[in-house]
Length: 110
Image 1: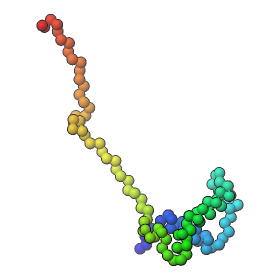
Image 2 (image 1 turned 180 degrees about the horizontal axis):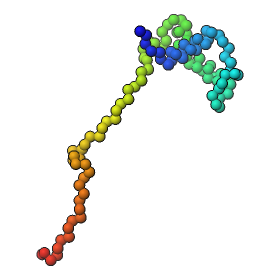
Image 3 (image 1 turned 90 degrees about the vertical axis):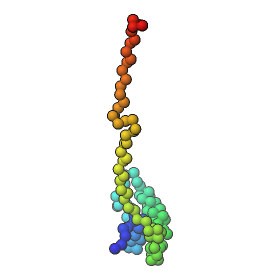
Image 4 (image 1 turned 45 degrees about the vertical axis):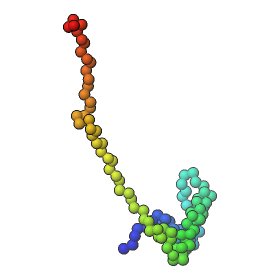
């Protein structure tokens, strides 16, 4: 059973697939994100290819890519439960006792 795909492996394979199929990318008719121009999309694709260049060369040569060498596959982290508050030594009863106003001393008692 094979291991899961890393995001980088997926991206490298997708770019290699597009390059091998030799389609002409249609930037004019492809929907673009809001605020992105045709030139911005072309530059983004070219930068993506430049970033993945070493992995693409390794994939075409049949060699393991950098991510395959390290063998790291992204696994979702298990959420940690927050630590419960522990009672302090003097807090067994809850809130501290209220202290009343001291009683007046009688002057006549002297």
